[in-house]
Length: 611
Image (cartoon, rainbow, N blue to C red; front, side):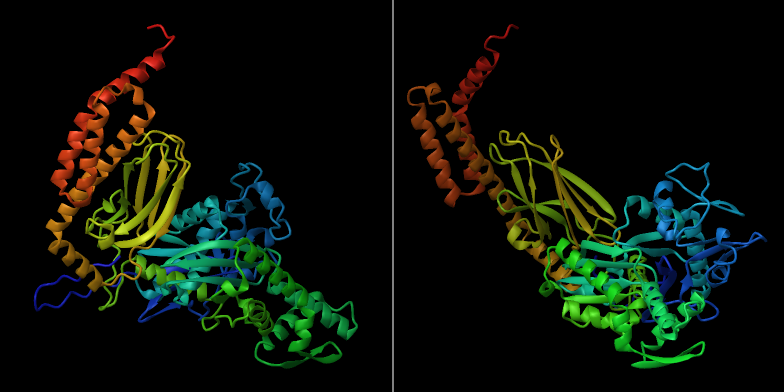
């Protein structure tokens, strides 16, 4: 949200204190933490200079909790007490986890509820929340050491496909680690933010995420600063390890020694894979065999996992109802996307060069770090975009092309406000909602933010249906507007970023305009409201005469027609006072007729009933 800068004349604004907040990529294989360091957001290394923290926790015989590289050393020698891939376990029941036995070779605590499984270790039962908390605590310690201060908040990334239970457990893990969660951010959205794509007006973005053991692809739609996940796809059994496995099998075949140690073959395969990221051809020695491997040969060896990845991309495009020509940007995430054959395959499939300027291992953490810096309230000397209050009123268009304000300007956020509206015509079953921003009374003088439609309203007489419209602005300045029909529960909603494209001078101009036109605006509102009442009465009288002409007395029809004609003429050229007076006159003329209709309808309803 934007605010105008206010300061004493001739004075210098006090430089705000920089608040410490970080972005955390809590990954399945590795995790990272990033923060703003000067002008850039960067990932923070440990004391040894390593940026990646292996997402592994070991509970030692001495009672110590080891996280990262230290824990990784025990993955083979003490597997039951060394937990890897805790992220896979978040939000899952015991029956689901047992299906992942290949990845999670642990003994689960039989005394725990199926919905809250835990692994038996020498340190006791450890559920995925506790394990994740240990990883987050290690990242928190690293960040506070590097930044030399206490963290005030963190943005933590999660896969776009995470459900509510998985997201909630991520928050619980953060709380256990002593972190204040500013926001959970979808991983593909974080990658887009890192590349600054959130500043574009609109576009469709593919995030291609190939890690060591998993593959995810997400299609995002960006509209005026708001990201929407259109589709997600992936394969939890597809990653860089598959390329290593296939290359290792090829190496064994080349040397003709089937008894060659599988672990050594995979290690050599991994080394060759990395070398081919920089070289077109590499030589190798395997036992008594000497050979070479080119990029073209490697591409042929790895064509099966690449084909699987492209098939998933094709399916995700179909799910999002997009064509290849609809894609504006492709972002590569995950260490395995460094392979030239992967980059070439992605470029060939999507028909455009992917974005690769940010380290694919770090891009998600960097995006989260950018978001954390914004949410905690840090800003430069020239940036006056704050998240404290709404700078302009938010509301919806009502009949007469007027704006009904629901959240007034300068309301502290986060905030939620609701208001009830009703239908204008008999039998109305849908309502078009137009979300507005500004201080003026007329729609034409305010800023249009979004439009959406509520359907499924029961057909009733005008004014009978109740539509509850709720405006909610979160700490990130994101506005959610929902409309719900209270009888049936029919609901529709939309999200929009009110601050998108809004500059300080625009706000100042809109505020000044509202002050200069205050009197004229109020006169316009009075006239338009009077006209709405008049039109509604004219429609109601016409419908009544058409439905019950037999109830009209002699001469009454003519008087009503004259009253309607006079009111219709005033709608064209009259003032608000004239329209209101003639509306009251028509009400009086048709009052007796309306009373007879009421009596008639009550009599019909009670016919055959005993009271």
